[in-house]
Image (cartoon, rainbow, N blue to C red; front, side, top):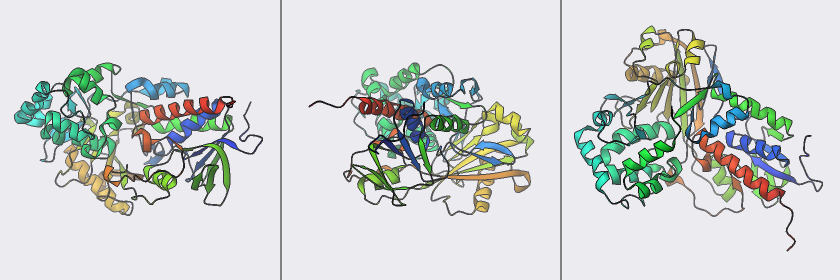
Length: 454
């Protein structure tokens, strides 16, 4: 039976602001538990960065295309949605690093965000050199307290293993995955448990190995046959089935103790408001202060007819070290190597995805310029000439970049709200889904409890 959206007093149980993955996962769990939910989404669709576009007749992910397998969070949720049999692992050849000096190397196998679990391994030595290995090995002899108080991932790794490990291993990997330099990322957000593991194990290398041992065997990431965007449809179907009042094309202007007000002037009263929006909107809505406008991440998709790429010259893709001369992209995914289902769908063509940060490529950069930059960078990174004559299709998607640490606003919130989504959970589907489901469980317990008799 579909629960009522509002109580007899005209107050909805929960107003969820933001229809990205964090918002829709949370709204689904709340409604399934019998709470009345109104969901506001400013755009005309749900799912946020988990979305699809069609390039050269192929339906492709326009945002996220894989998820971390750690903890089994996404796999368990996909199974709950009926997609468990479509979970697939990527090609085992792995990705490469393109260093600032132009050299390229396979990413070392035993590591966490580029931090080596075995600094003396040959694949680590090839990247950081003898001096870098010597400095990294010093980690084993340092007191566990060294670096333990560092706030950023870069600061922690520099203190323990030195600059070469950060600059040649951690930086290209973290910048490609999280869209920020490790010196600007909170270690507890991108590597939860790493600092406590350092204290427990006595060295950073041992901490990395310990955390890797806790992870399930197999690939660190997985995907969904047909694309990660397939997750959205069954969630949306569940929202409808449970009676969630979904308001697309509706932007929330303000929040107060009684609920939310839309830009259209409607006031919706709610027992609880949940913010599941990006960094910029979260700051504005909770503090009523201006926030630094978000930068942009542009994903350029190339579909090319180039049989020379059949050899997968750089495995599943390339992560680019910041400062690499002559390159504008920060990463390239050779998607038809990474995912066998996509290779079958592409029918001999190759799908390449390149990501660019602003201001190198911004929202206003013309499509032709983005296309040409993607072709040029793909040629350099893969070692195969790619020109306009090889291009079968081009697509582009632009997303907000995460807010840099120095742009944080510390103004006290004017109203207490629950937050969910990437602004608080961190980037990555696993973190967002886990955080949203925890928040939903907490809200269900609080809002379903009988009133106090104090």
